[in-house]
Length: 93
Image 1 (cartoon, rainbow, N blue to C red):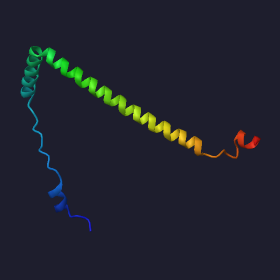
Image 2: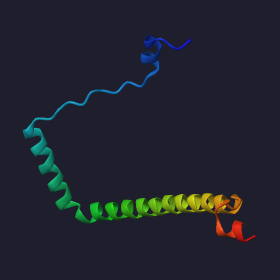
Image 3: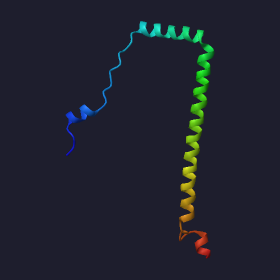
Image 4: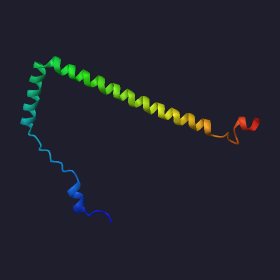
């Protein structure tokens, strides 16, 4: 028996709704960010570079794994397939 909607709502994670900021609040936030960046430029750039390097390495590893998996599937498919009745190798043998 599937759970009722009451049971689902009780177990589902609750997310708070995000309050929309006014344009003045957004501008104040931008100004604070600019001031912080100007005062801590070296620290901010070092953190960005470290994150970039980490994510670049993770993305490269993910793509290498994907390539290796696809290559293994391809080689397994070509090695296990019997020659087609219309292939030249089958006709000549």
